[in-house]
Image (cartoon, rainbow, N blue to C red; front, top):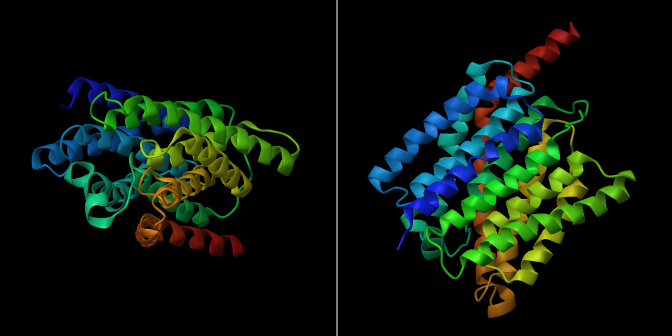
Length: 335
């Protein structure tokens, strides 16, 4: 039986990702408070509509909006570094929520969380498609509109990433909707995968730069968290550890900490894609290692590919005004 107290408390814990994203990107609460208020109001409305219509039944109508607030905060925080206009940020953030996050969230959580598996043959436990793929692709497209900028030291990046990891644990536990035999494994894997990812990322960063930075360690943590969102309920513990090593190492090897958008885009996107594809190989009972059949891996590849393409197309459309502004500034600077 669903436990409303559990998933309501877990939704509150999930919102810890809001200050986490602000700290991770180096933004300030005074600057982002209006953005957060707009995103929170939007998702409160969407959650209410989803609950009444049955679009996102049960606790999903509470937990998915909380996850949407965190993703929306990440998008707003990244834009705030280069887009001073609250109006522009709000329009783009709302577009991201309605046109990218919501469709991917419904894909994962529709029909009580069984739609993705029952109809498409794919797996995603806690929303890697809307959070990691949706936000990761959008932030990548947005980062490209600003080009390369000077790297800034983000003093509290690691603390922010740790808060995001805690928020993800709360969300994943709540999405089980009750405390049962699977709950300890979900919580353990949501903690272990980012913990190992940060170690893997630290090793790669040490080789790349000869030293470790807060930003690099934070990116490893975020990559592990993004990967665990997809997998925490579907892996054995050893597989969850290996996933952390793979996600953290790849994310750090590709990491570009030159702007808030790149800081978020790289670990989210790489962690999410890695976790979703990893399920096709190591997913309990149905992954290739256990079943000897490539069906799940093929389905995961198709779902990830289509989601990437969809998010990229919509993100490009949403950022057209930003591309135009950058072009105008470039032309003005050349005069």
